[in-house]
Image 1 (cartoon, rainbow, N blue to C red):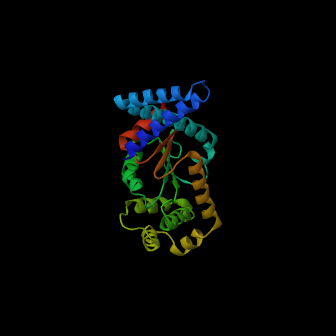
Image 2 (cartoon, one colour; image 1 turned 135 degrees about the vertical axis):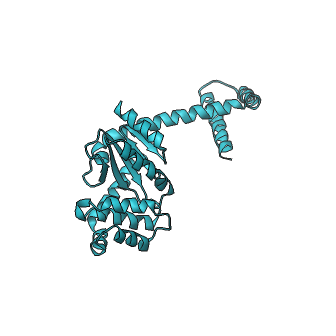
Image 3 (cartoon, rainbow, N blue to C red; image 1 turned 135 degrees about the horizontal axis):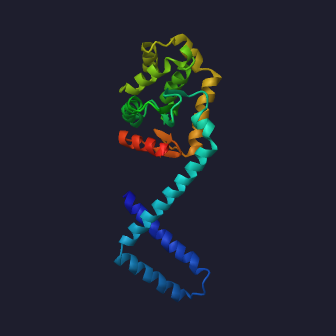
Length: 248
């Protein structure tokens, strides 16, 4: 059905474009009707034209989106790579930085987590910046508030244990589970709850949401690697390739 809708959209664009062009030409109504019939006959006889047009349109849109993403990354480098708040895993002085926007309730984020951990183990020059992006409802917001608040304890040292435990958890995330995991991760729950309600935590999450919107990140996970914005769960091999590309 989706492919049919795209075909239809391309066809409409063709006819609409023809109509707009015809308005600048001295064609009679009869000539317009004849030309439209020719176009219709060609499309019916050669429907693969619609496929080719759709692919060309998608390629053009992807190229434009990639160009816009690179411009957005260049204009927001400090907020993306060096905001002074987000937790940095791996090598803080690494030569390649991966920035991940994630949601603790996102199955795809959990799917890609083992690949990220493997990459950090095998490549000691990778720097990973973790940015909470709670987009999947109120429970996501609670989990992200807890994560940001965890940065206030032990100079942020207990954050990664909590983060990894949350990513490994496969049940339904809610406030009770968040607090349970936080306690098992060694966090002071009384302090955590106080910090979760602080203006600083609210500011961090709002900044992450605004930055994701600026970069055109529409879901989680979303990655920025070097100059590239990469949406969705990516494989370990794809991450390796992105790192190699960033180094080159």
